[in-house]
Structure formats: C-alpha cells, structure tokens
Image (cartoon, rainbow, N blue to C red; front, side):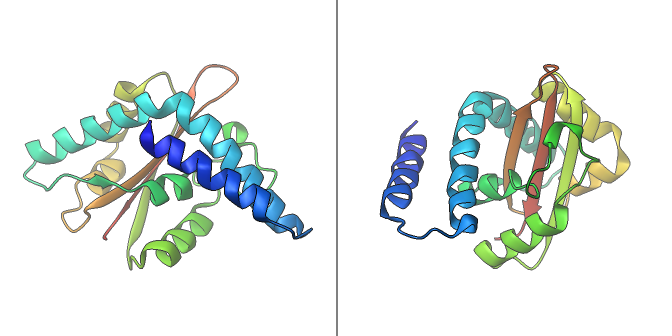
Amino acid sequence: MKNLNLFLAIVCIVTFMSCSNDDKEINEVESLEKFTEVHSKNSSQESELLRLVNNFRIENGVQTLRRVSVADNVAAIFPDNTDRCNSPLHTGASQRFTELKRQTGSKSVSENVADGQSNAQRIFQAFVNSSTHRSIMLQSNVNATGISIVQCPDGSLNTVQLFFVQ
C-alpha cells in the first residue's frame, strides 16, 4: 500500500507540473493512471503468481526472483489503442523489451504471456504445462521480474510476466 501511495503521489506531481501540450506526455500520464487502477485491482493475483513461480524455482534449485516495480509498469505497456484482452499474445513485446532494457540496463529480457485463465494458480499451471514457458521460468541467470495482470470484460485474466537480469 505504501508503494501504491508513493506511485500515486508521483503520478499527481507529474500531472500537475506538466505544462506541455504534447499528446505523448498526456498519453503517458493517462497510461500511468490506468496502470495504477488496474494494478491495484489485481495486485493479489500478481503477488500469488510471483509466490508460485518462486516456489517452483526453489523446487528446481534456482534462485528466487525479486519483483521490480518499474518492470511491473513496463509489463503493462501495450501499443496505443490496443485492446489487451482481444490482441494476439505477445503484442507489444519488443516495445516492452526495449523499455525494460532502457530503464534497468538489462541485456536479456524474456516474457511469459497468458490469456483466459481465472486466477494465479491457473496462470502458473499454464506456464508449467508449456515447455517454453517453463524454461523461461527456470532460467538460472534471471533474478528479477515484473508482472501485470488485467481482468478482461469476460472475467478472464490477461497476464504478462517479464524475466530479466538486474
């Protein structure tokens, strides 16, 4: 909750201090506000997914992941006017990878994306059941993650989890 309050304060400061009419800046503030709303609604699902992934990594002899808030923000990035719930999986991946590398200095970024599950346990199980997703979860050089889960109008969840070295 403390991190959410800090994030909201930063969004408010950015909103009130901006004197530019640049549409890009306005869209970035709107995106941050939308992220804050979505993130606060799904933070328990995101935390549970991280707990499940970290337990799986421990069971397989791999270090746990540290959640990085800037990576959570990046995981929520989708191209302008993209309906995240009705887009092909991995839409915007290159944009997310570029932004995460820019903000964290990471040289290596990968992601797992899921759509249509009802909770973190089912998201995690879908990742485990896919050899590609499972191998991404178990990368031994990765030590950080960012997670964004959005609830779609039909009640299903759309998930992006980024994995990177920091």
